[in-house]
Length: 64
Image 1 (cartoon, rainbow, N blue to C red):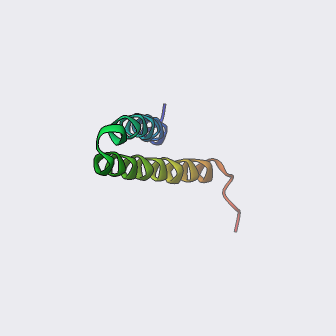
Image 2 (cartoon, rainbow, N blue to C red; image 1 turned 90 degrees about the vertical axis):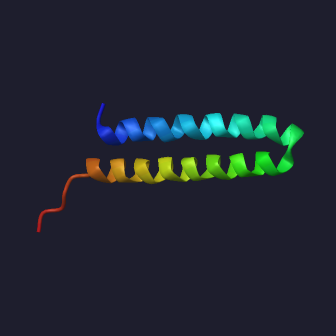
């Protein structure tokens, strides 16, 4: 597994875990749940950016 693949896995897992925590927290404390969901969203965005970088790294380089 490459470094970028490991980072993708990390951010993906983090987004899922934070989302679950946010759902539970929002039942007791809406503000805390909202803050956790914001962190989950950011982790998801980081994951999507890394996936895009990974896909671009797999594309054949154009010959100039």
